[in-house]
Length: 479
Image (cartoon, rainbow, N blue to C red; front, side, top):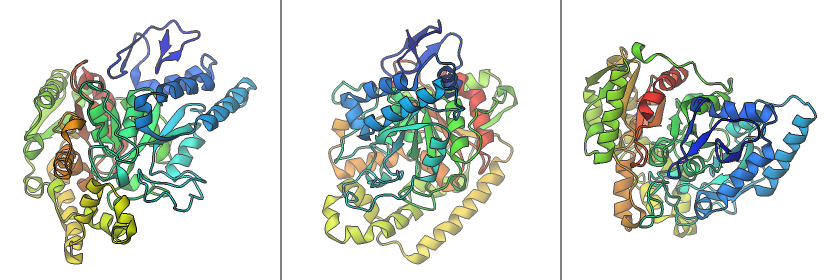
């Protein structure tokens, strides 16, 4: 018998069924939305120990794809912490709600006493962090225990999730067929740690789609919050104007729990909003162009299910966005800020240690004039205002998370090809970052088919309402 992520079940008679391709679980009596809550309850009731949960996760990590997904595993440390939690629980001490649940973190989050490498070798000799990143310390305070640092695109600047230094994390889809497919970037290892049962929860960062693209490519949930809600303290930046830490989980409910804790609130799920009360809009135009057949099919079927379930869905056109197409902007704020951060290293000896693909993207910001950089903020403010005016009658926007299914690794052999496909992978997700709107990606594909994500985009700073909308729509979206 198994519970959640192949954990040995002790007392419950609930039956679980595991799909080997995506590790998505079907349960008779427990709602998947409360996955972290279920683990918390099972641990608190003594039906599961933190040590056994930790060993299950470590066993999943001790595989070829675990070595691709993780840069560093805290095996000894996490065992000690799990044992301490078990002893405290047995002694009757009051513990935080998620005490003993393993958490993986993207390699750009600070951990006290360790060097934050951000998926690079360039930073290997940097000074160790003197404190945990604030979102990490908040999750620790809630009881989560760190199991390891996950692999990522170097410096978080690609939508593919490939890394020449630490290996290429692979999507669970067709993993052993022809070399496998990319897991999506930049939070690639984080996504695989969830899809493969290596951790019940993980955190990544999202500047142009780095939590949502990997979520779509790996068949899990990824959430990008409004950037100002999440503290950037202790997170290696890509673009301080766009970066936002976000959770990646097995369900919307789990994402809501993580989001609440990370934003210094209560770690709880949101009450689902009834689908019949929702007004949803699809911003037709470039976001729906050149979709892979599998993406078009799965997305359209999910939209039809939402309509049949009572959601009122309209098509709209946002002309300003059609003109801007933020993902294609060669003079972007992100490129300028990334180049400012890396300029000295790219002009020195360290330049040879960069991933050539990442270096090429960063260098694209080298010729952006100060006037162009400033103008982009004016354009961004205007776009945010106009889009808010045109969408104010809708509860959320609907769109495919990515126009692509995960590309095959073996086809990505040149820098130009990687840059081209990365740009396409992030085409749709970049919009939410440009508008700084909370957005969540939910799997919408049928079992056994290519992974596809459907994104719901809410209004700026209305993150918890979006999570309530997503909670009400999740079961229908998943089919």
